[in-house]
Image (cartoon, rainbow, N blue to C red; front, side, top):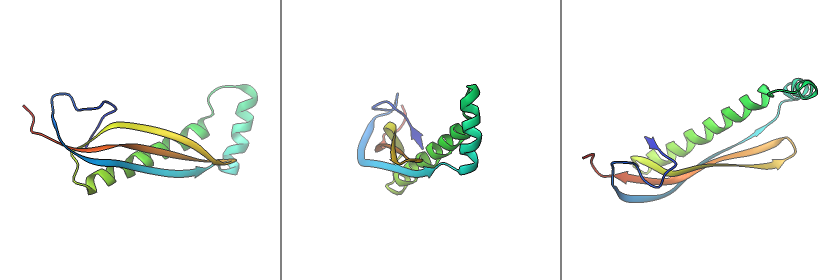
Length: 107
């Protein structure tokens, strides 16, 4: 599956737009990670526990978006984007979305 942030795939023609596809996940912070993160906050630097949490959430949302595109018979997802939002204190949603398309043959 080709996934791009552009409105098209270079060198390929879009022959059919299949619609918006999305994938999301909601993740909550872990108490143990919060404790370690609060110590890191005191000395500065990257909060690796949260970075790993968000990386996993982005990957899962991306995979779900691609699965939805495959179910529609898409060759690619164009105009792919990520968004995040806070659901409640300590829990966030990560959303991946784009347009599923069928591509013409490569030249």
